[in-house]
Image 1 (cartoon, rainbow, N blue to C red):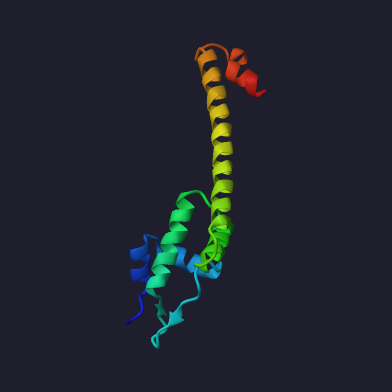
Image 2 (tube, one colour; image 1 turned 60 degrees about the vertical axis):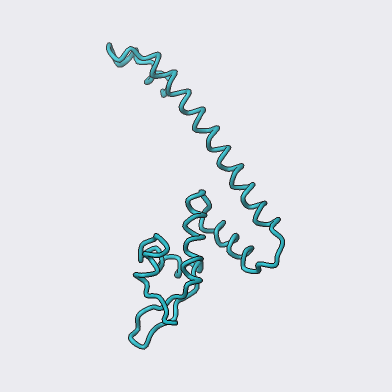
Length: 131
């Protein structure tokens, strides 16, 4: 079976060509083989790997965390505990961030509610709170 071109790989995996090159440079995607013409050539396994990377990014995993996940999933006979632990760590980070954003939202709502929106700037409760 003939290999897949970088354009076709990008289309199948739902990423752009520059992303593929970036992942290659950073070791998330193995270096491609080259055709006699010099064009890069990829396998169907590369499509699946890129989809895994993209979905992991969609869940907020960093590239370093994705590299860890890829390492943990390289041997399909391994136990899933390591992957579960990584997902739990990511969830804890997301929940922490949600709590932070909730606190920020609530603070902004209070400031906005306290500001009449007119009058002298020196009496603005938003400016006072930020000063």
